[in-house]
Length: 231
Image (cartoon, rainbow, N blue to C red; front, side, top):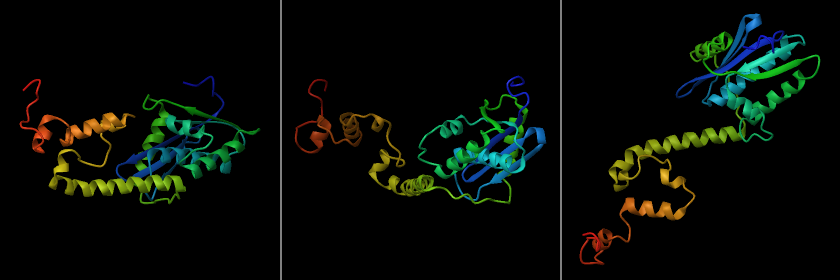
């Protein structure tokens, strides 16, 4: 696909993989050297973390073991590349800064480095090998501890708290009348509208606490529960 653009470049493919709920791994495949590296993580992260660490491990290998040359690094993670373009990332700060430090070194002559996005699962051999290597690493017994930055740790802690709270709600809500309206702590679809009046109106309708005849009748404020316009 790039025989003309990257004809004389060393080609490297990176990929991240996960197996819910807590197995994550990354891989970097060096096509011209016929070798690959993998990492399995010792704690729960997200797919973006795995993709970024795959890029980081490839850059570390390039800088440590290779002589200055032209290199193209392929990834099928468009989100990872977009994240690297951010001036001030709010998460994955430690990993992004490590990647940027390597990039600043590797784009300086005599190095010539390019990052290239490729579509997922379109039959590119190198990408398929990197994907397979990352999946095999998911069952590896050798785990690597990667320390998250504070923002990433806060995100993971919040996710764990929400999961714990939802597990608790799953056993308590069915025993109360609120079980008719909630199954977990996620937002209701109408709560996503930036209009409190709509949110309040729909919530009152679902709970039955409205100014409609049926509710007013239950409170003993009117003589019958029928609508005066359409009985």
